[in-house]
Amino acid sequence: MESKFKSDKRGEEALASFLDTCLYSKMVEDKIIQDFKRTEDKQTQLSGVDLILTTGTRDVKVDEKSALQYINRDIPTFAMEIYYRCNTGWFMKDGLQTDAYLLVWPRAATKDLGAIAAEDFTLCGCMLIYKQVLRKYVNKFLSDEELLSAARALDRGELDWEHDQRNRYHVPGNPELYLTISGQLYERPVNLVIKKSILKQLCRFEVLVEKDHIRFLENQR
Image 1 (tube, rainbow, N blue to C red):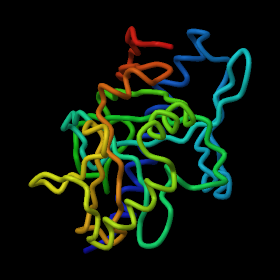
Image 2: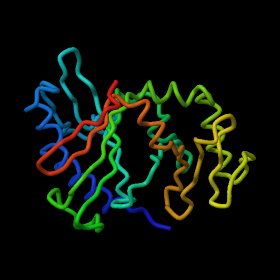
Image 3: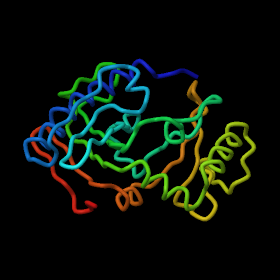
Image 4: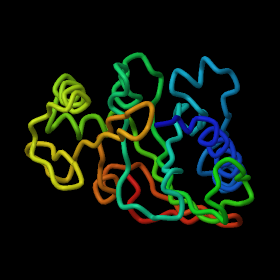
């Protein structure tokens, strides 16, 4: 088991550069937002804020989350980290300043995250979804306490939810949601996996980002 921290960090930095140039800058040019500012200090980043989008009415503190480990695979889901090695994951952690997540499904000319550069990205599907909207949806089926308890039980190998051969533990009352654990990774993260079709219904906007073009899809709220 090993941590992929270094390569993941390189991939995140390259993706951030791509999004700054090809998404946020174009949103400013098209007057969709007034401005954006990427955070520089580590403490702010650790508080769940990668950048701030300035709109006509408010500043939105955004945490970028990407499916870089599934680059070029166009997966129909996104994983929200609930628990890892006796720690609360980013989706459940108290005290974070995050207002919204930018969920990103990337495509690129290379899958080598240790060497990837901003110019390697060719297409990114993105959804901006407000944190409280997503949490409210999940809480219709599980309270925060119940979700964390289930994640800890799965980490111990004791979760008694219905599961399939791929060890996807389906949330009681909504089989569209399920818990998984990545036991092959050092961090052993337990994730709540949500289908993209559900996220489309909840997101503020969905946009396809290419190097020279952005296209907003119809499901804007």
